[in-house]
Amino acid sequence: MKDSWLALVVASLLPLFALLPGRAAAEPYLAVEAGLKCSNCHVNPTGGGKRNAFGTLYARNQVSAHAIDLAEGRKPWTGDLSTRWVGVGADYRGGYESVDLPGQENQSEWETTRSTLYAEVRLLPQLLSLYADYKLSPDNSETREAYVLLKPLQGKVTVKAGQMFLPFGLRLEDDDTFVRQSTGVNFLTPDDGVEVGLELAKWSTQVAVIDGESGADDTISASAVYVQPKWRLGASLNTSEDAFGSRDMQSIFGGLKTGPISWLAEVSFITDDQPAGDNDSYATLLEGNWRLRKGHNLKVGYEFLEPNEDRDEDQQERYSLVYEYNPVQFMQGRVGVRRYNGIPNIPASNRDELFGELHVYF
Image 1 (tube, rainbow, N blue to C red):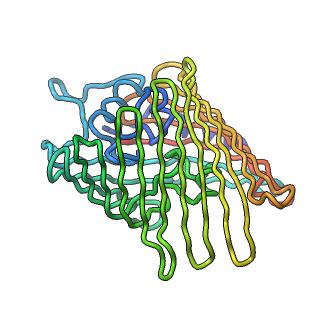
Image 2: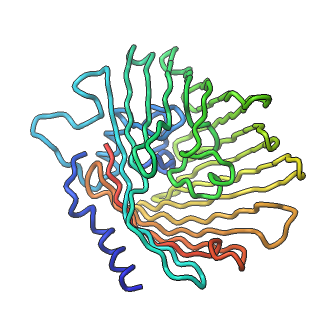
């Protein structure tokens, strides 16, 4: 166990020694804190992936503890390749994780958890562009998103066609949260289809239609959020069908800023209609982000999962405590612990996780 703690300390200090040039993550608490919509900082209207110029400068000047001028007299990096026609970005996440399962030997490893590249080609600036999100590791490289983006009426209307992530609930960085795992809508599950959105001063709405499998209905996913400077409230709907049956999902989510703390909350309801019978389940998330000072964030979270409302004693809980430090632009260090409480005779549902992560982005 001493080796595990030593490795965690080393991982937490990596950002202090790494001298890489330059997302804050696609974490919606940043939008709640600033009173912004996802489209204010990201190329993708639903959030995540490449940051636009405003999002890059916001991460540099507001999220990081210090902003370093990389070259005297040069403008800060915004992702453009010396032209307004092409923009790029990237994310790297890697570090140390230790997992303690009851009755089993502690498991630990150093690994790259995610590395991605983003590219945007502006065929007609502010109107028509091509966008791609490409995963390099871990495992096999693959395209996560690749679509045409049309934004007529000064961006009030958005139309995407191609491979994309569905609009549903909060666009959380952590794919292991119960609300993302139980719904199956996360950064691991893109689909091919068309999405139409409406971006107004206080509203952000999207409706996506995904072509269903042979003989199945199309998947429809819709989301809408009303945004105010200190709070927001949204709702999502999703209906799909495959060879195993149909699924209907609803989600209510929101955010609230109370002084230095930005809160996130979501509850998702899921109904599966399968040959073996119906199954009703739900998952919840409550998360508080306390900006201790510029560049320092303390994240506390609680999650609850009810995988089957007709079955007793199968509920699961997850507690999280994470400290995030952004010393300079393009860099973040994270250390944290997570505690799972679940079915007594299943070790994986009662595990403890300890991790340290280096996040480099531009």
